[in-house]
Image 1 (cartoon, helix red, strand yellow):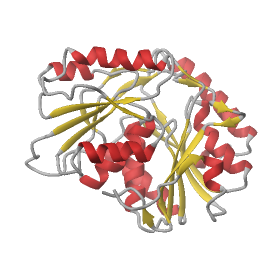
Image 2 (cartoon, helix red, strand yellow):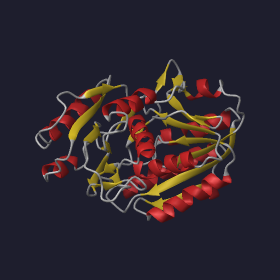
Image 3 (cartoon, one colour):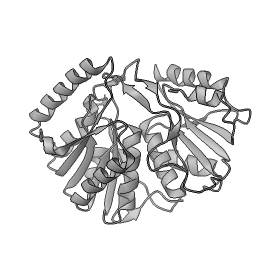
Amino acid sequence: MGNYWRPWGLLTWILNRLSIDQWNLIGSFSTEERGLKVLDILNSDRKLASYNLFFVKDPPSIFTSDTNAQLKKQKRDLKSLGLLDFTKIHEYELFDRHSKLVKGIQNILSSFDDNIIIDISALPKRFFFPIIRLAMEDRTKKNIIATYTRPNTYGQLLAQDPEPWSPIPLFGPTKYPEPKVRRIIIAIGFSPLGLPDFLEQGYDQGTVNLLLPFPPGPPNFNRNWEFIRRLEKNLPSDVAPDPIRIHPWDLPECFDRLVNISDMGNDYTLLAPYGPKTVSLAMCLFAELNGFPVYYTQPKEYYPFYSEGVAEEDGEPQVFAYCLRIDGQDLYLL
């Protein structure tokens, strides 16, 4: 797990303790207000060197009208920050080819200097997993931070119409024939998005471990347990008896749990990131180190009111920053 201190905390607290004046940001342009908060903070603190935003376009749906209205509001917010530059907004279809996505990410990374912040707050896993992987593989980047902004509230409906169970881009099996899966680690979230149907079809490889965000706080507690209830009747018989409780925003703890559950990565493990973004980030880093596959049932449609606002405590926006690489040293290692 490496003998390194792995700093994390509120973004402003982290930035004030690093002797780096300017940062390049990879973020998102979406319907979510929180997706622009890191850009706002860096711009206000005069620490923004450059930025590029991924605009992930959903297929046409019953939500399209509301989505377009929300995007117009986000454009107004960007304009009020003095940052409405369409050359910095890169449009992709949700199911664009892997090769197109990889090339776009690499082009952005090559345009940046040493210091990068990757804001995963409003990026789909299908996009932020490859972004994190390609950034970590780029040894010219000396300092890499990931950020996550808590919203005020989540919508009752988040997404729908999931695709079949498949690997996230760049996180498919890397060995052929694929080794026998010893463990399946499922991060519990709000919606299983077709996962129970997949399990019902007889995917019974390996011991299943469930990661439960704790403390979730109401009403998230009920939604997490409803997720587990819907899985229970479809889970294989070889399931660890109790969910493993993890702090939803403590990236070092989440990562270390994955290392311990998998016997230091010796158990070939399949990862299923249905929980909080920070837990998904831990799975991304862990899978990248081990060459483990990450599977997901990607929804085709996201609700335009997926989240609202930005959470605050004592007047401080809850924007968390996680140092992944500092001065060329990777901090998340086995």
